[in-house]
Length: 163
Figure 1 (tube, helix red, strand yellow):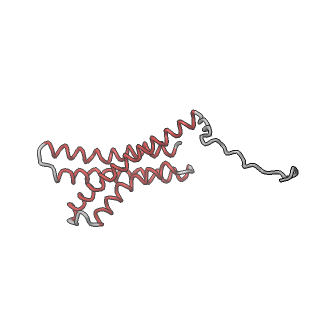
Figure 2 (cartoon, helix red, strand yellow):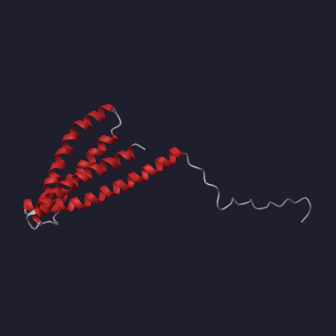
Figure 3 (tube, one colour):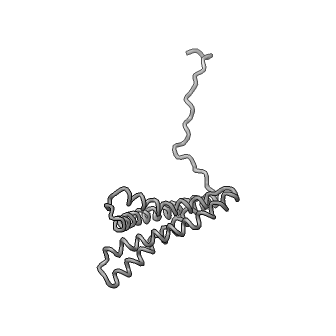
């Protein structure tokens, strides 16, 4: 090698553990809110799965269709997912006109679907209750499940969309 030749050395590698950018308090709060919203929506999803099986059983009892039949499960999914979808539509409406129009229809749809869900859940749960106080407890539980779905979905969706 002559003196005139230049040898290029490999570039220095950045350190493996580069310092992380420190998050602002607002960004940390948004991340915590997102994580909390995901947890609340996870609980809502579990309640929906629980309710779907009760609704399918209730519709099977009322209509005489098989419990595992697609009709009972389609009704169950339409009821519980219907009121959650209506609430999500209300929260996600972007213009005032859309917000007013969606709210007008969603309000009564949600009320109707919540009532049907509560009655069918209570019906399915009381059908297997032993009698006496168990019937009342099962009926109350049937009404509590849709209310819990509604409130957890409302809280989780609001937290998620208002980040």
